[in-house]
Image 1 (cartoon, helix red, strand yellow):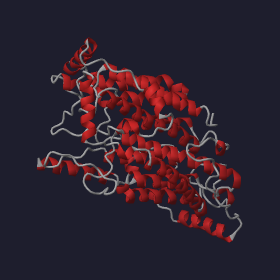
Image 2 (cartoon, rainbow, N blue to C red):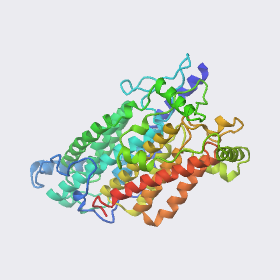
Image 3 (cartoon, rainbow, N blue to C red):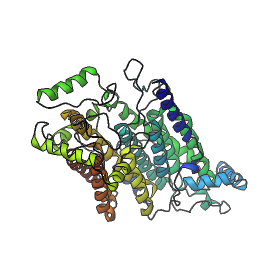
Image 4 (cartoon, one colour):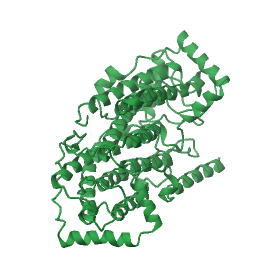
Length: 514
């Protein structure tokens, strides 16, 4: 047992070290952001939490003819006169877009922390603590619900901050330094978008503040990335230092509204306790059903049984219970349930090569960026091709990730309301392809996440709607092929996810961006 624990800790150390690589060693090459539209009216779009774009004031910038501004331009020239290859690569990396790159960094952090704690010598399990994030087990354990929540808070906050930034950009209309002074070399594509406050710095400010809350043990890594990003904007000739300072201050101010919401959204109480877990088991027995029981040895506490009570973004808790929560699963004593168990046993016993491939492709298990992160990666690849502006990137990623978090809440509500057993619990002959999640079966998280993501992404990129629906169906069925879920888990999960996604569409149609 001691050797296993040492190996487990070694894996964590190696994963942490992987976050310290040079940015270009771990990130995909993307072209520089060249928006098809500057979305110059984005300062009028409807934010998520802000009362309006002027809630946090931004002071007027100094004139471009003042000695202070000229000194800031000279700082750019000094950097450019001595620019290194590494710095040029950094400029190229960050030129792909602030929202894109920080989303990518977040996925790395989620994968780093997506490891459940190893049991104590007495057979109990420790829980990560935000109050002591560097102790074992490190906080957070970035499981799928936690990851969906993290992606949502950052994406929604980035959107609100950029809506405010666009308002002040159009108000003050200060040109980029490469426009003000033709002797400044533009190392990125030129734009007519006003440079004050810097959109990149706004994203830096809002993101780093939220990441401090979400990943408190990784602040050194996060600050390193922020400094790389700031410096890249100066070297690129895109911003003077006062552009960056104003943008970062605005981003940090906006972030505090989201931090306040996060501290009160009930996620901190989602773990529950033994009394609650026992009550859920007994409630299932009282209904005449076979309750879910952890199949780990020793039995591990269920994952976040109260996450279904976390505050949603797109609808209220009554809507979730009355509209999105699915009908009960087939009774564990019914013929339909027996037939579904038999189907899973058949997939477990006789999988095809293609079914095994699909099960592994969509698994998104330990040490990955989770199913919500997988859909973020899919969206990233497609959004790059659309040439969105930075603010539209934020808006679209916000819609996607709010729907993914709400899908997690709806799914976890159903899981612990019905407390349904996994196929391998009912029939021990069933062997899963990619591991066994430690929480009830109905409904499938992969299916709910995928239904929500495919629905909102199909609205954002209509030409890809059919492809997204096909991907969602494959992701859902991957859990059947992997012998992890019954068919009803997946069918009803997709349906619930589609409903969540439609609420995101309803918001998209009224936010002023369409």
